[in-house]
Image (cartoon, rainbow, N blue to C red; front, side, top):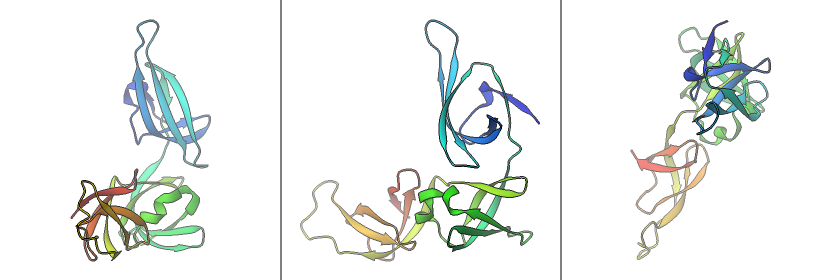
Length: 187
């Protein structure tokens, strides 16, 4: 297996920590005035989904996880399982719902997602930065309610409800930030 140094650590890299594959969720390089530099990281265990904080000395060697990232199409949800298909080989892969977490509320059937595979088993999903969803239900904005930043609640095609500006109407396609789950723009 290949090794990398703390210089190569960045968000989205998969490493082995405590004999388990972890995804780097966050990395901060710290160079104190006194003492040696270090990297403070947040790591997500790709098997259990737990997030831990771990500190590496600057220049330390880290084992890279043999994780493969494939672009798969989301088919459907069956209780606690999510079914994906490889559009090139038509191979179906199942991912447990708890590995996706609350991202499921923004996942649309038929869309392509990046799935982490370890030993040809789906272990996690790389969430996109933004998703585009169609507004299926929207209340009319109250006339005269134009105070700066006025919002209303809408429902998108996945059933998720969120606050958007008053000018958004039913049938509009909007972009939603996956991390904050907030409205970004109308597309």
